[in-house]
Length: 283
Image 1 (tube, rainbow, N blue to C red):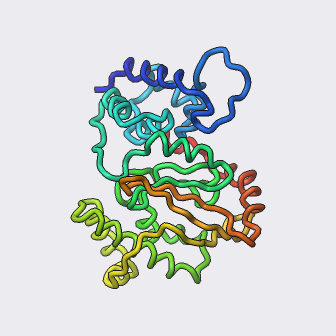
Image 2 (cartoon, rainbow, N blue to C red):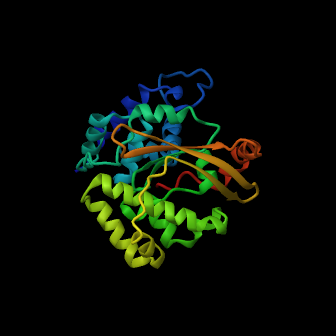
Image 3 (spheres, one colour):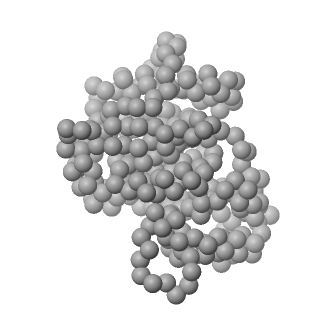
């Protein structure tokens, strides 16, 4: 059962203990009360200010697990604080298994990379967080719930996922996705999530099944990609992965490739791209 009063109090106390700069936001005008405003927490968590306000006031429907996970990231909770938040919401804390927790330190690094696209994902390519510029570059992430939320699943089962890449590069991307999954499968051993993803993809995609039988292995940590973005054109970006010590979470940063016009196009995308997406989709 949800402890509405306890949940509301904990969220308010945690909000009051943070400053905008802790979330990579400008300090702004002088504040009459300490801490973050409700709308700033809502923005960081990807939900409407009204919806967050109702949670903090103990009103409205019980928040979903996706909402609680987003609030834990937005409020920079450590593992113990995150588990406490889950219990207040009437949920069992998600298992401390690979690919479910972004440390506050990693979030602070990501917050400061505002002029390039940044994505934080699991080793199964489930996007847990991305900054506005990454959303403008690649589109909104699927809700992080199950193996079907991963980029690899979407690449082989949702044709629209490929629209942002030149068609002649699709085979290279497909091979890289499968080789990366092989590498993750090897590192995780007999992990259930890996086996389930392989089973589902093998049944859904002839292309995946054929590539899986090749047994190529190789987790990508550096790559150059061409993105096709409406109203901006082709962007040549260099992708770098920063892995955590457990290698279960990776932060992917997209830098302008030297000798191209990608820097200017990213600046343009920062102005016009984020206007096409509504951050309240988690409601």
